[in-house]
Image (cartoon, rainbow, N blue to C red; front, side, top):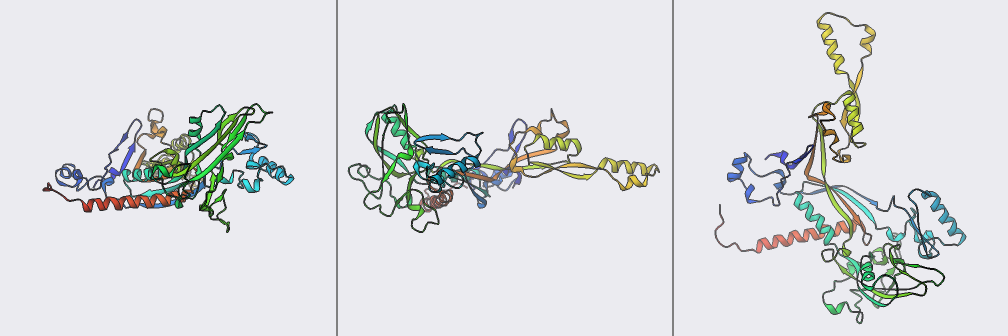
Length: 452
């Protein structure tokens, strides 16, 4: 087995060894003539049976670093990326809360409507999950990515009943905008719509439907009144008494966080109304999966990147080492002090010809710097260090490869579910798919002779 076949080598103008295999038991790699021709007993390392291992899992808020949005007196104010600073803006909101002015989301106080970082509490589930997945072939890694994107169920608006709409946004466009508004609900306790009559406004099934209402009117003393997603109000149906409106803290003993019903992002602009114009509607949120429509996808981004491996085939010393650190992204390479090899060679030459050096110079041997690899994951594959036309002193000294069997996954949740819930559900669905495929293979009857 050629172990190096699991690596793709990055060169200046191309990528070598991009071959992969979709099945570890492909007939082409089962030995025989194919194996004899290549001098291998089997296929490349990516054709070996997968033994996936997950490690280095981390979860962080995906809202950190974004500008904060506040609602004050029905007006939307968005913090500038440059001014004012975050600390001063938070202190202003807290002072207004103490004075009773209420600068929070939808008229609520910041302590109730905002996280400690100043974001709406409804966005607490907007998270970034990262983890390492090792010993897995690219097709299997991509299958897991597709399961996360298209198979994990969520709630989304799928039926809209418009009573009035005098705004500039047409009925069809308003319905489409509502469909893309993320809705959090007890998805694990809801059932799918399996028949047309189950999604009717005349007969609402509390096990399949979450009902929201929106009614707004343009202020007469304002030229344009904006209508936001925060104005959608949930209307509990008979049988939904266990559910509760608004996000709850995981430490809240009175409410189960999984039973919360709310709109994730309160600052989504739905339509605009002129003076006296009205919009009145009912929206029905149902359970679905992203394979049917992307509005049911629980993630805004889900991707993986193959692990980068950087090797210095020869020592890079002195000015060349400093140039390598300078041209590369920060943190990829570093510098360490090493004895000056040129000085040692001079000492050997002088000793051969019988010359002796000053004792003081012997005690003060000079040193130089050598480049070392610190963190290959920070490499952006800019290939700048591979440009031999500009850096001839680095020619054939830096080797960059991508490991096709080791990947780093990144999953960013939209906010209907916590990232760890998406991850756990995807693992369960992935296992079900594998078991189902195994049953199909076991129950398949082989007809005719199998070629040797």
